[in-house]
Image (cartoon, rainbow, N blue to C red; front, side, top):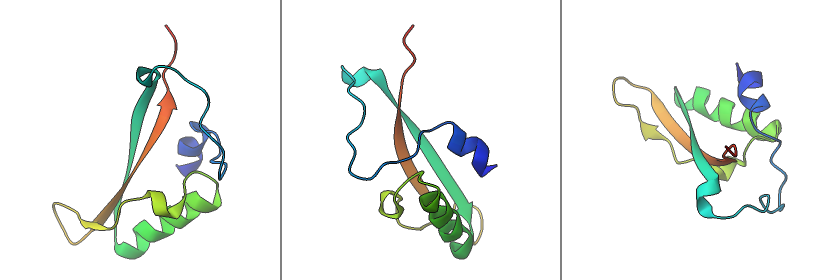
Length: 84
């Protein structure tokens, strides 16, 4: 499952600027939400970091999930919109 998600985005290169795009509407936000136990959420965040998907600090702090004892964390990335 993570491999499919990772294949949709190029690796995150630390300290590299985003590709040159103009205007701001050339980008669309992508929200990635992880819901599980605190340990499960942290494991996924660290695994995605090890695979170069996102820095650990880019994720939100753990928040209570709406329906049970789970917690959640969200990451917002940007992707270039396809030119039509």
